[in-house]
Length: 415
Image 1 (spheres, rainbow, N blue to C red):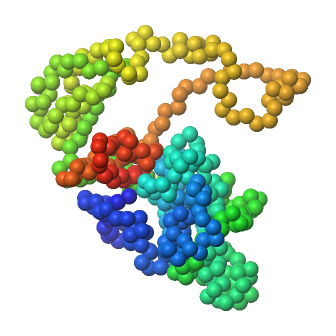
Image 2: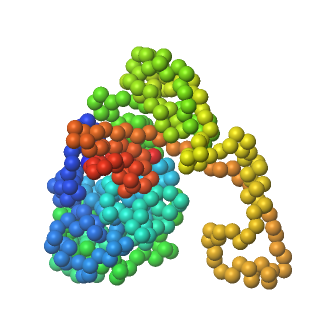
């Protein structure tokens, strides 16, 4: 998230030069912080004093990696540990946190959180968006985040009005003292709340599910408008000076290797072509324009060869049949793997008066994001790498890109 931002009106634009800043400096410099915004994050204390005020040390694995920034205009900025790819996680987190914070989901501005251990909320310190795990792995944590924020804002109001916190209540976006009729918006209380300790999340009472207003209810998606009007920023929208474009032609079957390129010399001579590259199971053309790269790589005459004995690539033979493979899987015997077990299924079936058996077949579900997945990479003069990419596992960037000691700056985009 080390982006250099410039503003014009209500819009924010990416500039071409990155800036490397610490998370602390980023928090303090974010829009709203200097104007008195409340930042809440377990594991990301804004001051050493707040960390010292915590009732007990933060246990690894219980950190809330996403943090809230409550701005003076009552909008809520949330850093999401999970990547938005059209599945609606940004809206879901706004529903979950907003329910306990007492803020309309529509008040949230949700962004992809940067890489870092603070945002690894899943078991064993993992961070991955997929397998329908985002909400399941963070539901209680995010509810507690919202509830803690609400308590801090109520305490700030209690201190200012010199009344017991028990006399206060909230309505969406504001604290109310019904006895005196006084009210204050969250944005107005943010400056006072920022200095308060974060409550112990183990003792926070959460809202009764029967009182839910937004969790489990239909709400308007937060990302639809920007995606419908072209404002949403994908990797393919990122630009840097003097960038080149690459297009890829993959092998027709898994495991095949690149043999000869019969017209490589002619393709290299095409106007705008920078280079022709051989890749594992693919060839690529790098050019000054995307269309030039696309047309050139499509015109490459590749002789694909069968893998050699030393190949470790997954291989699909020329005789592979999907129908035959389905029949092979159906004929497998054994207990198999249980995806989920609740209760004693065996006893229930054995004791049932009537059992019904059925076999269902379904096709593989293809992911269909709005943007064809793409990536942008730039090396600086020191050999460090900066990347923009839609990445479901953002903390694995060094495993993927690093060759030797190198600093990697990663910009998370929508998928």
